View (spheres, rainbow, N blue to C red):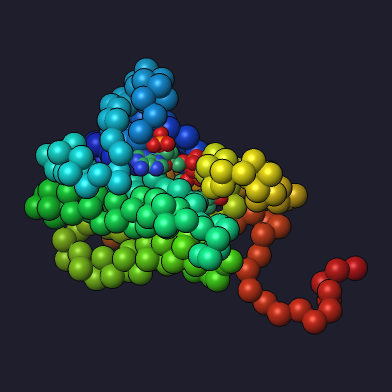
Length: 248
Ligand SMILES: NC(=O)c1ccc[n+]([C@@H]2O[C@H](COP(=O)([O-])OP(=O)(O)OC[C@H]3O[C@@H](n4cnc5c(N)ncnc54)[C@H](OP(=O)(O)O)[C@@H]3O)[C@@H](O)[C@H]2O)c1
């Protein structure tokens, strides 16, 4: 079941960043790509591209998810939409930050799976790609965001067990820092936004992640790329250094 065997995809959060790059790459490969997000002007722009069908849906509204996608015969579901509210830490974040992150990054993923998987399993054909994060694999200083991505990690591995024997594949992509708009919306305070965006390293581009997603989708039917971790060369995780041993 390589990419050429799939006909229809649903990509959430396609009005910017990773989702947009992925939707356009899939449309370029000849698929019909349904995209879901909130910003109408950007959806309108995207729908000018051949093969893109735009849906203005707030994914925090589960009724809207079922109304829009229960009858869609999708071969591919890319659960990509996400927000990064909660980087001020749980004490300094608002209850609204907490709800926005859990509703978008976790609850919407479950509801989209519930909407799309019955058709995939009945047709014995499908590929779910969940966009997790290295924040779901390693500790970071945001229990809210890290917890949301940790949930995506475990739901992906549990789902693989649930779907065993159905022919439906589940891939989790875990990127490190990618240059996108996500941190523009992470804080209300522009100085906090500027601080969180100033990594000083050469970050991944959205297209790098889209390329990894297409690699997983293009694997032959007997291959499931289960978890794919990728990061900028200059971003590393864990380790304990008492002295800067590796710096000359
Ligand atoms: N950038 C990074 O460093 C990084 C690293 C690891 C993982 N990720 C993950 O990658 C995914 C994509 O993020 P990105 O970095 O590409 O960010 P982005 O450019 O901000 O894109 C986020 C997308 O999600 C959509 N979205 C947010 N809330 C929504 C809602 N309630 N309903 C519908 N759509 C919604 C946005 O569209 P509208 O605003 O138009 O609705 C937008 O299209 C996220 O899951 C993120 O957690 C990002």
